Image (cartoon, rainbow, N blue to C red):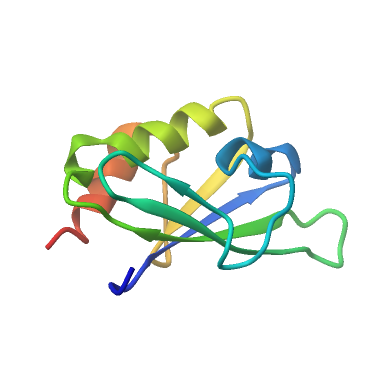
Length: 112
């Protein structure tokens, strides 16, 4: 994909959150991704593991939006997969509520 990705960070203490978002046996930065039927793609970019055990990990993704992203496919997927985890969501540097409506509203800012 040629377009610029929207930066998404998931901050959590639960290591299982990563495998909920991207179903793969191995994770390679820039190579592991989730394709959506609207043409969007969520690409794993890496995990920042903190030295301090009390500081949560930061899972980083790039989101390439498809033509129908306003339909809510991506936001529904993220919320459904992370529903059982204590997470913080940061999109394009702004921390937002980890609910479907808020995530979708933020992603719509990036639609062309």
